[in-house]
Length: 223
Image (cartoon, rainbow, N blue to C red; front, side, top):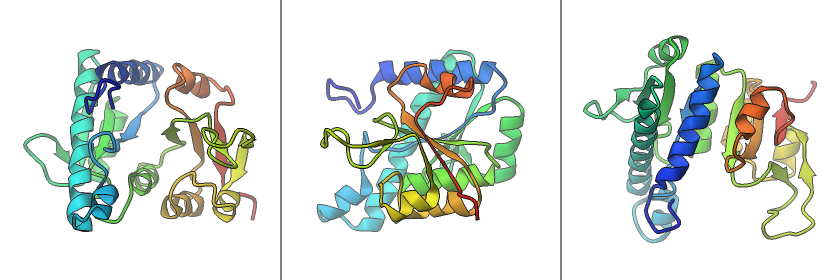
């Protein structure tokens, strides 16, 4: 969200697009799951009296708007990209089909997964975990506003403890609010490692891909 009040900050979109393009230039295959909270949050609207299913559907459409904005920024840089929606909106983007998404990635295209899972009551976090599993991702990155996972919100608690590494069970047992429970369990049960990192730390994603220990690593513990 733009600090001037607009729903989309063009400068942030351009910066993210540049960082994504740099990743692709190294040969990495990149899939992105886009949220829509800068435009509308379905759960919040439901708390204000709107029907929850309707609110979530509105939120899913908001993610499509963000996905199209990122697609445009990437195409401007010459990066091939496809937006795939869990809702059928054929006039503006492709339907999500797993095999087609994998084929796009194999051809060097960024795939932007929009509209969550296509179902109400499921968060964008759950959609991200599901898509990571479906495309056999080597790593899932949770882009957030803080350095990684803390014992409490570091913006509110001065002595919050930073965790450089956790198991999924530890994150669940301690209720660290990394992601919603469904998303964490999906990653744990399917052995998908996750990095939680600050998306506003410019260049951090590339440093991570180059081997730097960025953010918090969450993995399934030894059984």
